[in-house]
Length: 247
Image (tube, rainbow, N blue to C red; front, top):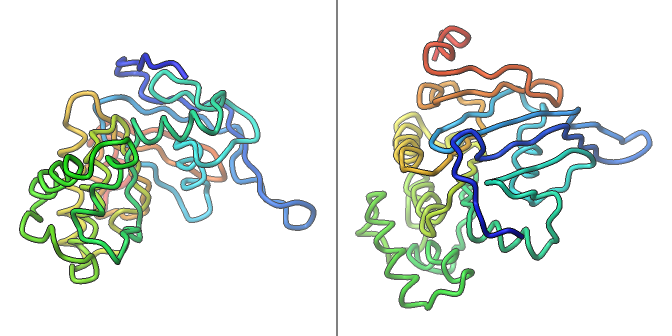
């Protein structure tokens, strides 16, 4: 793996000619069909489309947690498809942050301990990791809840913990899979404001997979998927509003 990371705004990630299928025989399903996708440093890009169109599969491939059958995956100037499993794991730990629909917090440890996990994976000491975790939780408005267990927090608070965990190691690429679908409108907006702030930081890209039109106005660009392909990319708020007037 090359340690030199591209800082070109046009090259945060590029996926080309991606094909992915699951099953065999009567259960064979082709999920991605020669899909192409690009995201830039310094933007919040939304990936939208109906259920089953391949959004989450595409997100998993660019994260390196799922292998494409065909095509190339270049993330931050690195050929992810050419890395070994060990190299992909190290790459994710250093450069990627993940936010999931169901939070995926560990219920038996404190909020601060949950947030510290990415730093511990990188080899930081427990003391340093917890200190950075508390600082990051303060940034998302949870400085007074650092010693609580996740189940004592509301859904919106748990998602903010998940955001803190995704950002604590200062990743270049933040990947979000339906981060607001389990939240009410108020908490969904609060979560998206935090993600918007994260995307505004220099040299960072935030990608949000969603089918939640309540949050479309937070996007810099929108990639629309259907039948396993990205068929249209909308550039800027006016273009998004023109095609999604209800948002």
